[in-house]
Image 1 (cartoon, helix red, strand yellow):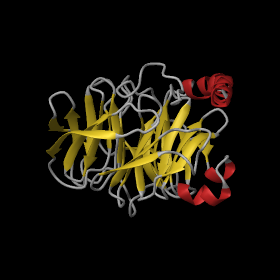
Image 2 (cartoon, helix red, strand yellow):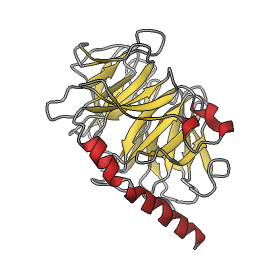
Image 3 (cartoon, one colour):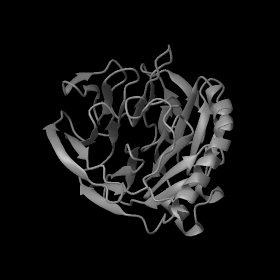
Length: 312
């Protein structure tokens, strides 16, 4: 009973912020969400004006002081739950589900192993990918016992950099170094796990970003030398008509909006966002941008108008 009342409190707080999220984000037709490492933060910015619409820093949220270091060098950020939440992760090992309205981390935990990506599972649980740790990590999204006492499960994978849920096929995709892995989810709320389904070879090496192509049944796939479109139905790759080589992230939005790419200028970061041809669309001097994605609903992975739901 106590757990259900706590969940109701979270849901009501979220509903109170829906208007805020809708007003701020829906009015911004060209907003992008950025993993920005110079200040260890997540930023939502207007691509046209360059204005910062929203930002999240762990030290200014409900993250415990001892855990702030988990969120050093943010490495991915995805809009989830109808753009009312951000799912982020950091190379420092942290994973967090953040409510846009009040910047509260309604759940966070430690994955470790240089965490590079995270994804929602259909029941509200979370899975992350860690590159130097060489594993995926499943979390029961327990909003009462987090961050230190939640159920976790490691699934070995080489050079884990990405995870994407395929709603139609009910599969979790992860491109690991030079192989594509498909997993089935056990749909066990209390003890989530992944069951191997398929593994096949990919061209090239060091697969990096994997993310839905807007409006298509395809995934963007980047590695050190190429950018591909991966057809999840036929399981075939086709070289994409975009800038190639060393692309850290790629995101498309349809409706006449450009495909956006992040390509490092120094080490692994940049201060600009490019279009598919390499033309600059956005720049902020001094920023260290690792990934950038459009603020749009992701209907490849989640139901339309998806709302926060937690495993109970």
